[in-house]
Length: 107
Image (cartoon, rainbow, N blue to C red):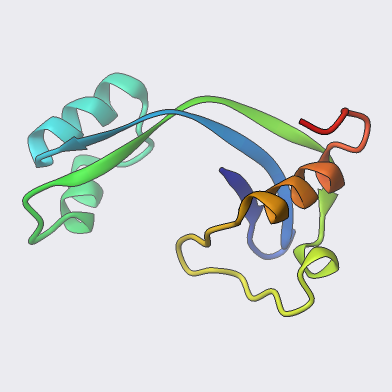
């Protein structure tokens, strides 16, 4: 998962490696967040999943900070910051990784 920092930074700042994705009801998702440092309060999570029977928790294995914070507009001329997420195809993901981690050999 490529990490984009909004204003004032407005750059790609790293990647998060996903361990797994958990589908849970609210109580199960709250337990997962509580046990793993979810970064939200119970009321925030409840408001976020209101009206849903199940929701998903993305379990992050590790985060790697970019060697070079990258302006996404340099890679994607029509870039508009997504409101939640944006899919990258494998070729674009490799472009992003080369820009943020130039000292590493391509995967």
